[in-house]
Length: 313
Length: 313
Image 1 (cartoon, chains in turn blue, orange):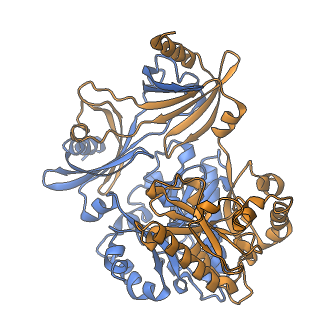
Image 2 (spheres, each protein chain N blue to C red; image 1 turned 90 degrees about the horizontal axis):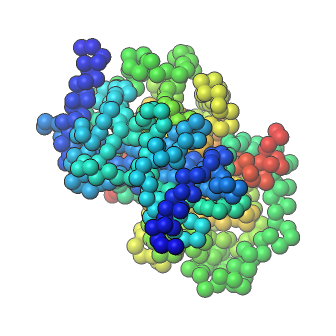
Image 3 (cartoon, rainbow over the protein chains, first blue to last red; image 1 turned 180 degrees about the horizontal axis):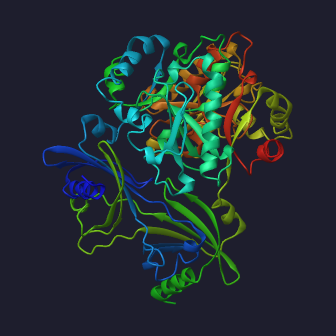
């Protein structure tokens, strides 16, 4: 199958999506997720409005009548005026208004992930981790569920997106744009680094011995981002890991510090790499690890982990 | 002047806006603010993309070709496909894509309010803390700058707002609504606890010895919030401290977990009380403290601390 016939097939599938219900929406970030059917299979459409194009030449012509149509006033109070308008960009350079992620076929896990959920704070003790959470994590790594990660690491998919690679089996990692990023808007730059080693499920597996490695990886990620996008200096890039992460192969997020990443960057989900490192350093001996300490974090009530472990505690 | 002639006058002013510069943008919320001139006067345009229309009849026709044009695939991996598209709504019912706030004439205060504060990641070593940051903190505690806190602690102001108090001089604290909270909308509940002891400027002053006290305070805050607002269970309340805080008298934030608090809750600014406690616990001895470790956090370029300490490093 040629690439373009694959593309038209995917577009055809997307077009034949029949809405079942709205899963979630956020009016702050202008996002929504829809559950639908394609034939008998589940599929999910995640739609997000694109950000403004703030390049100077576009902005200079922003409010001209040819670009802003149907300008109407909603109201006025003193020096404040409110308008609504429709918009297109100058010079026939129409900018897409929506970015989609289309998941097809979708499983129950995907449906949960994109559904609105209630949140809970949980306190995961070392014992709870060992006895219940770690076995849960291990159960998610079998049956090919990490194949998409291994495909990337083996250059079998998304190879063309790789921004930087350190190929060393133990030291190395692959840096590429996160799916959430449109790969254009620098202020929302969002990359991820997948490490080559496969023995780290999450930050729980990091020990004090890993500190020098983590420092090197952090520096290399920041340098590679700044080399690929020279608009950034390294202290304008935020590096963090998630706990709980959405998949259990160790990876580090690298985002533009200006990007408000919502829940994914909040305390209780995101742990800054710098603070992970210094916390490991402050531990008493080389074998000390995040497996030994209590971790407090936020969990969705629909998550498997809440349902199987924390709900009944 | 009739209403419609006033409206056309405002639209004319809006149209004659000449861009001076981009003040701020946020790709998460799809927002931007522009500074411009209308004649010799300053004006500000605040533009925000509109959220999706999620009414069932609109959603049902969402991905039809007449409504989504220029659908193009960005990429694909396994079950994930990414598209971009332009959008209009069915039945010629064009929805405005942008909501504007137009501020004219604008003052310097408006310009500051809508300007971006550039952010930087900083790494504060124990030495940097001791030699430069701690003296800076101390300098902000003199000359009556903390009187507003001491007034609250002495019941000389805001006494009517107190939700709970533990009056013990060493153990105790006062819990009251944060000024940012409207005291009505439960999903954005935002309280703060000011401790009675005056010897802790920030989390840097916490030692391993403080762990039992911090645990008691945390439990008491969560209980008091849930008693005052029985809609909440204690694991729906998030407790955290800021580093850097905006004033140097130790205080703990207590917010509804559903509340997206923006920058104030992101990793690199907010440290969950639970993780502060467990980090202290993992330190080697009773005198160990946050003063001994490296802290990575986010700082605004306009902040005094950036200007006086970090900018020139």
